[in-house]
Image (cartoon, rainbow, N blue to C red; front, side):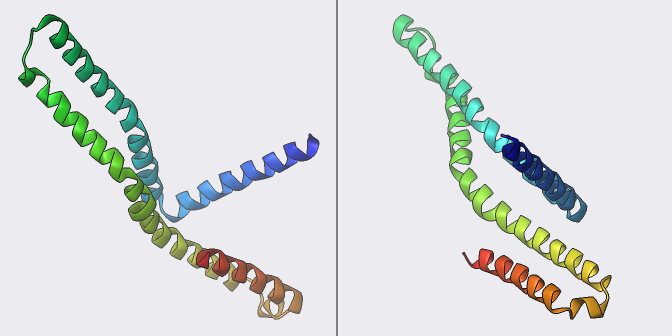
Length: 147
């Protein structure tokens, strides 16, 4: 149990560090991602309310025969638009937003790495152990991009 707590604490620290780094690199992209994710998540609940309204109107019409189709047309059109946006949301999240964030944060992390590397003495960078570890980390990063 103690090992799990330490692991969880380390993961939370990593998540906090990642969000701080993302905020430092590009605040606007992080806000765009958060806003789009929130809106796209809420669309399902909104669609259900329109669906409920349409079904209630149709049930009332069938049971009483009152009302006209023109009363429910705006709700049906809005419902259709919401369903279309929900259908497009995987493309928005998975393709467009992902590539925008990738371009922004990948380049930002490269700049941070270059700035950090410039602060290290050249003799330290030529040390075999440090060079091997650096190459291993870079290789894993490149390999993760390929996979």
